[in-house]
Image (tube, rainbow over all chains, first blue to last red; front, side, top):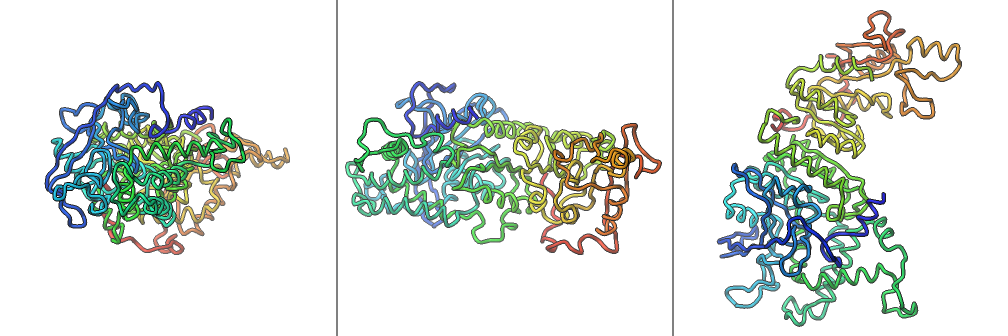
Length: 400
Length: 217
């Protein structure tokens, strides 16, 4: 349990103050690809889409070891290694690298910023060619399938005809699922983590609180804000609410308990009295500096509208799936509860898709996949290794 | 468990069969079965740390209890469903066996024989709850909920509308042929549905469309 406490204390790599972090990958760079003629589910067609992406590791001679890592709501293309300017580690540096869960010594890892995002891929912040102004709320509606369409174009652009695996947590897990269903011939292994086939009312409700906070911020101005006058407060509140839903009661108690902030007068209602309040303020502020409020609106809408089966009978949708699945949930995740993953596995199995399911008893809530978590890392590493080996030597395949 | 039980199962399952192992533990036996018989196999196990070991072995595994695990599968997905270390720990063995026959064609069950002569002697002359090689735990530590003899199991099968088409009985000295209900400590049996009156009588749900579709490679 001391290990678990240390993992909780360290937290994830996204918005924490991090000093002296070492990544075995050293400095890693993000590149940009320009893709032409990308059609959205809504019918809207982009003449061109810019995609920020990172690749790590080496493509095998047989070009059969590519793994696409899909990031979650607040993630970026910078998946692992140190950022050349800020020196910050990538959001999944704990689990992507030499000898790690996604082993860059064995696999060629691709991670791209999603469509509608704000870290280098075309999104609401991008300049609209016709007007010379940012899209803002004129950006076309984005779906998880649209994100996958753009990723598939990128994969093609990189000269790959197939991915060995697609892996992702939360929103990344939805993308992994959409890959397996929309592009069944392109994926051999699908690893959706802490995710679901569609949001329930509670998940939509939390997202709506975040969206309300943004659009009721006076600076939002129907999405037409300037870089100097952004709806920072709304976005910070959205992030604070979101962040609480990513943690578990256990993790928050361990991390903060009722610890007080030093040197403040308890009567001062505006000041953060407890450490947890201060922590959330920091999370909000740090996020505001790196995330676009309109992007937040678009991506949370995409999450809420995601429905893997799109109203069709699941058995029919899943019948065309050819990937093998490893579905992972976390017992302490109350935002994406294990029951959702279990139901997904049930539908997969009833459609005779080979699916392994593990509900890990790690205590860190929804963020369990983002923080140091050896139980999680071992499961992913072994699964990828075995599937890659068995795929190359099918006679060694041990399972259905 | 007596090693003869595993040998019998290996012996009974043909090459290439589809096998579901309920309560698969760390997957050691299932891996052996896969290697020896080239079966297509899946395991169900409750403890995540043991499921992680199954994943390490390259097995398809499902984390959950047995009832939950069975509910994941469509009708007649498997040729064989194994209940090797868990039968006496099931809260409702009838429901589980019925479900096992829904997802599989044949079911293999292993259990400890409570009518073994040492058990009888311990109760008769010792006057205490027996502790034997096949029932090694004291009454307050055992995970077994049910205690049964070979005769009891036969009656259970009759009520379920299934019959044993193979049976192997073991004691610490090896396989037992003579008066097994008296001399066998452990039993493994291969069950098949009676043609006239099957366990489907109480099973829920019809066949799924596409139930004959092949398993993924």
